Image (cartoon, rainbow, N blue to C red):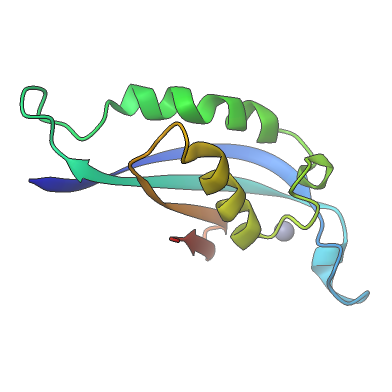
Length: 119
Ligand SMILES: [Zn+2]
């Protein structure tokens, strides 16, 4: 039996998009209340009845949470152009080695703007 689970996190951060046209509002420094949803999929552990302990996912994401929260994302190596899409790919790249069941990363910049990275 294979099950998909998700775990969500929230943080506040600032960014600007350096490659947009000069008149584009996203070129100015601004902040978002980001929400990140990690998707994992795998077989149920027959004894425990779960795919993975949610606590393991929280522990795996904690270093990223500390890196992102109240930071200017552009200052982080690899996030010089921190669009939601590239942030989702960055998170996937950082977490896949420690969360092998990770299948997708969703980054919500606002209640209406979301990027889903699913390589
Ligand atoms: Zn923005």
